[in-house]
Length: 370
Image (tube, rainbow, N blue to C red):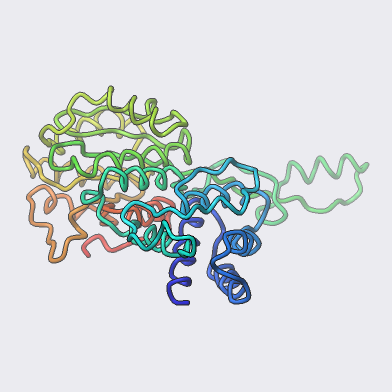
């Protein structure tokens, strides 16, 4: 039963990462339902999760996509109810032989392999495993946090709205009417992602750019994406394609400096001179995905990071090497940048990218010097 619990908790995390409302209470309700069902029956597992993890009709299509991707690697059609056979008795990439092929093999074994895959470093994945991770990143909801706008909207409580109150009174012929109120609207906070595509980041650049695509898809015009290496390239237009593979192909054609060197200080200065000072970084969540191996002047990088920190709402740095045991930020570029970073994370695996998505959304903020 412990394996089943771990598998289903991992599935609930996938639903939550895709934007679902799979909170702790709903997860407990799902596990309680499974106590009375046959966990080897795909239909029973599907309905136990659907009836407990979905809060409203808008969650159903998302749930179907996550269920298909997590348990079988397929992609369910949004809005359609998958048949019980949607869970095929095939192993996910990296699953043990006993997880498939035999008529009585439990689907939980394949799902357990998917949970293990979430924690694997993307630099150590096989081609099939990378394809599976790419599918799961495409399901990710990396929406931006909300911020208060200067504009107002009618509200049941809040600041008194004199104009609406007076108009309502006049409409009633001068009779005293209920007081009308207004409150500030909210809008998505801008998110800027700068992805290092230099040679030292080669094993991670594809996954990080796919994460940027998921963020651009979720956040719309509030998200801007750049690549950095020996030059700065704006990839926002290329990554607005809905299809992940089409977006990645367009980005690949647009980036002229794949696997080159790293001049983060110069590229960050160019970004701030051309875009940031003009407003793109002002009040934004800026995510820099890099290992900090700076071939240029580390002091320049430190100066530009300080400048960025004064403009941005928050600066998040994702360094894939942070997850390695005993890691310390000893690289000159990383050491110069870290004092100006609000959140320092890894981004080396699917689970780490889910954590990064939560940081971008304003939740689970970490320790910049951890």
